[in-house]
Image (tube, rainbow, N blue to C red):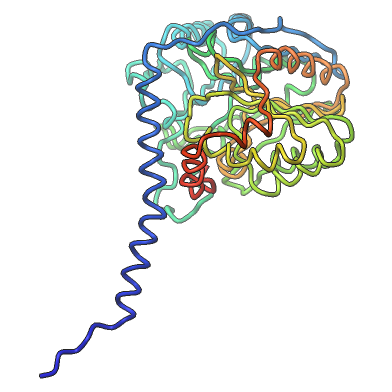
Length: 420
């Protein structure tokens, strides 16, 4: 019987499978190796001091907004607000470490509940996998929702159910609310440069509703399946200069990205952004480039080295086109800058939890406050100038002269860009 040669298509399929495996697998292997090496190099190293600005308060409409750039100042005021609570505390965080600072917050919340205050707490289970289970045990006097590590249940095909709870909110009674980038932990208290705001006035109600909506959407994830909803009275007034924007993946709502792009598209004088991670989509990049090319002073302040080395390398893939269009890239040295802020034309500003990446803008539960006020914009501009004094500015010549192996690594990691 004559020997039959193999089907040429089979050989082609094998080659394509191997090529696909290489294209997909190599970037993941490189990313894992980079993360492990970076983690090893960081052991025992501590960030150096960095300049900060004392908390500044401005009046916005019928309320006030205080801006914090140093964790200790913020935590002291958050604890003071918790200790002064009379009726209700709504506390939500992404990371809640079981260290001295985490214990301080836990103790303050328990003490408030013991004196009759209704205390609600939410934290993300995935973000706290490495936190001791003992720390995550709370007395029954606290109503605690641990947002699960896996949230899709049997609907594993439903992308709306995979977002993490990346929000950071504290609301005490009807009087004061806190929102921004700070998680809860001792390292964030003194070693990270972040931004948070304290809000009083009618805008506090928007933060209360944001918390209540998330609680009610997920309350059945608590041990008691019949958990009653968190009901709030309707606010009698609202503050048009302060708007709370929420990304809600379960409802397929992602207004924060549109908020940013609209503000950038309308800019005529300046766009100053501080971001922990900058991995935008092409539409966002195009908006930033277009602003710079029409003469707007566009400045992007990023960490020189963040706590996620792979995100840093993928972000660098955008630098050439940004620099060529006239965007100034400022890299914060010696400490991790974790702030998510922007100010435009001395009028529009935002502070919040959303990073400029796909996970935040099109995946996670996020919350930003949008403030239309010249006084607050001046405050953020002053903060930006202090931060800029601690930065190294990246020039086009310096960037284009980088080593060949750096360019090669950026190219290898490019397939991961849509995932972050």
